[in-house]
Image 1: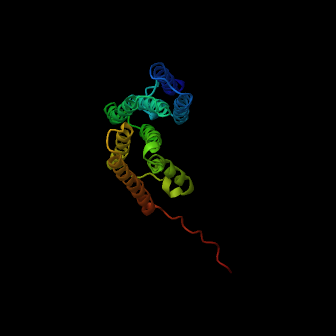
Image 2: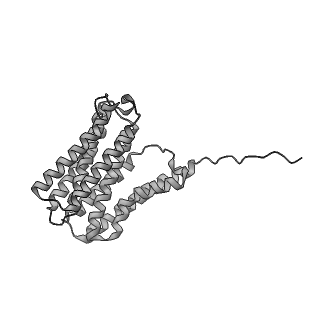
Length: 244
């Protein structure tokens, strides 16, 4: 059981090593260090909590660490922590921030493939992958909003607004069938935000692409909520004893 938890620990170590490398080459501000370390700690704690009490077989691992697919996702999370750290310093070369983002986006297509090839596809791995996607989109939206407008934050915050809605509306917590186009929509968000962060296209064109991206994301979450609303099961109204 304890060996399964070494994955998050190694992830946190990797995050610190990456931040050291960035600090020694391009430099990091105090805010950048704080953001990168906070991201690494939150990821390690959340993953450890998710693995707690989960048998190695159920988690998809062999008992000596995370399964291959989740290990790739953990590398992606480490890269996202690096992007978060770099996003706090305007003096950092944009190409480095975009490079780390591109690597994280490419690995997004690798972790699922690796999990399927090794027969280690799990619900935990899918959730971990989704949360790393959401965190990357949030970090990028905060970065891009500085030059494009605060409305871009809606792209990064929409996933977390949906999570809050799940707490208030129990019917939103029910699972829905997986749809590949939802994954495609999520990939579009990261790609468009990465292009916007690179600042290589005319800003009106970038703003239009971001608006379309936001519309697709709203449609994705809206269709999911609509499907859950149609599938909801109303609890029967209890019938009391008849008056005599």
